[in-house]
Image (cartoon, rainbow, N blue to C red; front, top):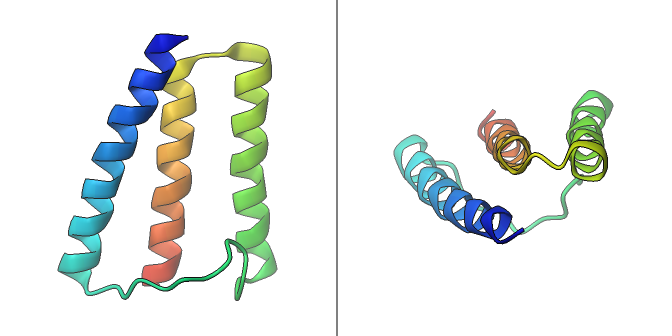
Amino acid sequence: MYTFFIYITISAAIFFLFEWLMRKKLKIPYKQRTALQDRCTVLKWIERGFWALFFVNMCFYGSEIITVLIIFLFFTFDLAVQWK
């Protein structure tokens, strides 16, 4: 279980560094908003699918690396949607 927290901590640090660099390079403004505000229905369902995949993986499979990858993909998708 401790390895999961280590993976989460390292992945969060890598992701925030990646997000900061991408926002700076692509000049994406940071907006304080709710998670699903101003999104079309398809994007909302994609995000819900990521959350469902995350919870299914946590409950039934418990693979820490896959869980971290799902979280990373989820936040990268959110960044790409904001950029677009």
